[in-house]
Image 1: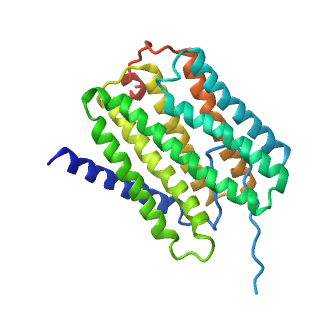
Image 2: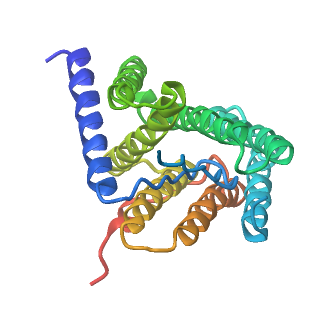
Length: 51
Length: 231
């Protein structure tokens, strides 16, 4: 197997693993969002009034 | 305006980020860890932009929300590039630089395509949803990449103390972020978790600054005892 093909397979494997992990961890969250990149306060998201 | 705890953590985190850049300059390692420094410089600039928007429009405004999500996507991209640069540090000497660049581009494109696929059906603004989704997905890709890098460090018996500690700090950061996501399933009070995520963002630059200050580029560490189980 060439190095290029190996990289492609590895990259796809990482992507599948990461998305699988995310799905498992966020499956039961109630639409809440969490960001940890920068310690700025999270914006208050306004809820749209129901018609 | 946010509460005093949130503001305090924000100031503290920005201070630690600046501290890391200063430590790198003082220890003459700015060029060696250029992308990590770039990430923290970007984060300080983002803090300034968010502060200006927050002061002008308030925390509930659309302006602050959009600024927050777009800059977060930018920062996550910066962190991803910084992580790939660490891969280059570890695998560069083995002649895998080309493959690393190719893999990084593939991963980024794959994550972007996946994120687009998820938000394509959303009713709201597509660009904002995409920025948010890409940021979240790249975090989890970063988590998996860090674990693979740690495995490679152990396998290759990488001994550079700074590199090992930076990778460990990033691993803890990504893992704690994922754990706080899982904690959201259990915790009722969202604010507590929010402070936790802010605290995490403070701890990463702090731990990296300590690494920069305590060790030189010539410092070496044996990685095997780090994973050995005490009997």
